[in-house]
Amino acid sequence: MTYCLFYSNYRMLLDFPNLVSFYFYKNLGKTPLLETMPLLEIATVRLDYYCDDKCTYGRYDDCGDAECKGCHDYYAPDDYDCVFLEGLTEATDLELLAYSEVYLFNRDLKWCPTFSKLKILILSSWFVAPDLSALTWFLQHAPLLERLTLKLSKVPNNLVETDGSYNPLEQSAASSHLEVVEIKCKYVDEIVLKVLKVSVVLPRN
Picture 1 (cartoon, rainbow, N blue to C red):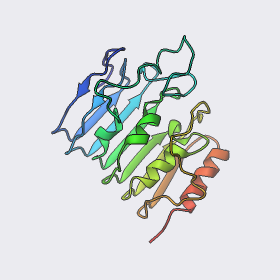
Picture 2 (picture 1 turned 90 degrees about the horizontal axis):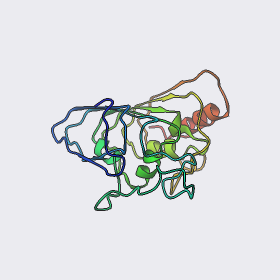
Picture 3 (picture 1 turned 60 degrees about the horizontal axis):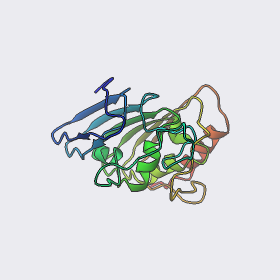
Picture 4 (picture 1 turned 120 degrees about the horizontal axis):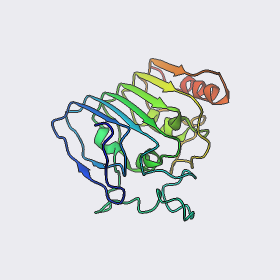
């Protein structure tokens, strides 16, 4: 699904129970509700600038700015807890990319269950915000993860911490299968060093 135009004031429902591969890239409007795909193996998702689920202040509730309409009315009809990520939890190979102001993943992490089959994970800079809470969440909720790739450009600094965030320097991540951590970046800065430190404290068999 590429360059699709979804409603800006209502969430559509996507239900693909027999889908094995899912590609969701640069779509416009509110991100749709995604039902679980039991047969899913590979998924690539990019929430770009044109996604309506974004806030200049990195919030997923009402930021108080009348000019910012993206963070209003987040909840979907029937008060779905998790809008999108839960639909991807059966994947074994997953790539998630997001524009810096998109908050959808930040909120979904609070409600999303474990990625029990995930072995390969690729994340963009969004997931490596300074507190590392989103990145650490994945490390602790993907018990079979073997390979992690981080595509780091400019790490956004406008994100609020993930609710119930974890301190990666005090708590070991859950995966004991992680063998490769690949970091693609132009410069080795403080964030890169923190990511490396997180990988050092991972438990080993």
